[in-house]
Image (cartoon, rainbow, N blue to C red; front, side, top):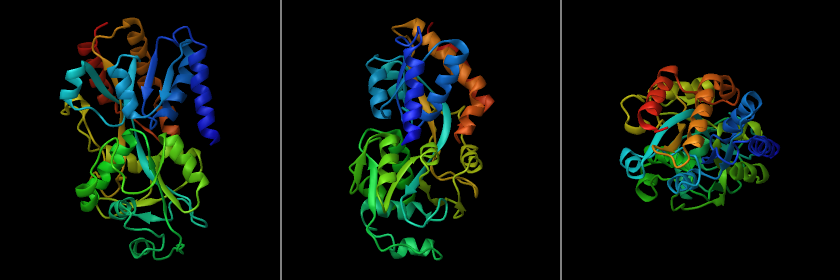
Length: 336
């Protein structure tokens, strides 16, 4: 859990030492928290201006921006155009990343265990109860799987990570789609709940024979064992920047109202199947216009100077063509 403590500390330092800290506030998705914290720390050092971002989950972030208690909200579950219009909100993608299944299995290293969307869905439905189940063994003929019971870990809070994970399960497992479906919060058939990507990562690290799902940076920095996946093309892929980029390559941001794009289960032999974007929400007409202007400066700086930092944490920066579209959106829709 050291990684989590470190990034929380970085965020708090940036927040507590800035003249703008009380003004520029954001809340929401835990999925991008590692990169937002890294950006905030670097931005503070360069400009003297801080950022206070609360990693509380997409559902809570949406509620806070709707209530106008923060300068911006952050969500991995994008709002549709009608919802944006209703609340007078502007939405855009900030960065892309990926969700990975993580396990705590003795003797198994990262990338050795192979899972499919069908099998993952059956595990989360409670149909597959043991690690040596025939469906898992068929995907892993060379692995020695324990006959122990699987401890299923899932999010307990409203979560964009859950939205993308359950969206993927709905696309790849018909029974999951029929019985559970997708959303930021669902009626889980089984599992132990944990709050945030942080909570799931911590729970998996401490629980033998557990399985969960987290944003890749949390898996990597917490040294969790991640699984490989079979994708839509039937190929086994590892979670890498290249496989995330392959999935993101199909996104048509220009034609999507409110940039509403879901990147799960994309075609392509090299595509990672649970890739996702994370989004920012701001009011078209902010109550505190000075804070809104400062937030836009931070986002502009992040697009211009934060790409390498994002890649170091295995996120995918938005393409330059999309950034130009987003900057036009700011000019056209956010009143200063």
